[in-house]
Length: 366
Image 1 (cartoon, rainbow, N blue to C red):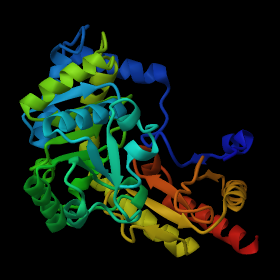
Image 2 (image 1 turned 30 degrees about the vertical axis):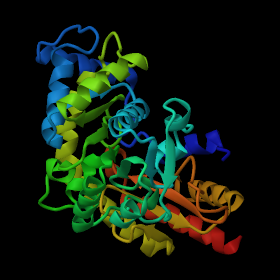
Image 3 (image 1 turned 60 degrees about the vertical axis):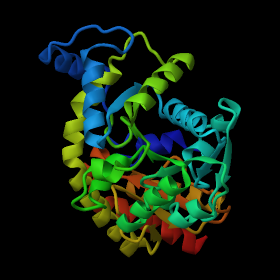
């Protein structure tokens, strides 16, 4: 989708990535350096120092797992999890949602790099269900459960359904892996449940440090001590044993408690903003009431029209809504993804709603 860079630059409000807002690299590095010095942390080699150990211990505790391991990317981490579970079960097939990151955004690394296969569930706009697990063939090594389901606007199974999925995986001997790229925001959806409660019964969990937390990058895998020891070997084999983990590791350490404390505010803003956008534009919100800090605005326009509508809204309101719109469901339906972090928290919700209203008006006249 083409972008008019001059038009975008002329907007005083930009909605989108990075969701934690813009920060000059030099300023961020100074903040990380101050954080390291305040804790007495210096140079570390090969991800084996106090900083990395502190981050891994923090993640393991939050997720209720015995151990955790830092990875440079989530793509590497999830591929490793899939490979380990395939080796442990003797099966080579993963049960994936059709919008799984492994299927859409990783160039089929599970197949090309790890020699695995995928079986996709049937429904794009619904999360994986216990029925999907029960109906799968007997060669399933692992069920990859994305919490929340990004391309369904952050949809989640109910608490009872989540427990049934766990039970079904255990009954058939399939490993359960939680793709928790955005797991941090699920506590509000399962009110009264901790991250450890959510992850209880899962054989492995992946979390991202840049999504929602806003760190420079990095990810973690958590699970049993045996699982993490196997993951260490595969991280090394795949080139993920970096000489130094900073500045990424301390950036995650300093932001994780701060951003976790802000999650209730992010979710509350997402719900309020979704309601305002729907009222102003008439566009469908997915899910109807956001369960996490993210949601999708479904816009019934083709690619040419939606690009022109976005540019029209930018000229009319000074708000740049998106660089891209998802079109996986078909050429005449696009989705704008909104993920509330520090960037959106700093924007007047009325201005965002007005920009979507401008898009709707353009579409009616097109």
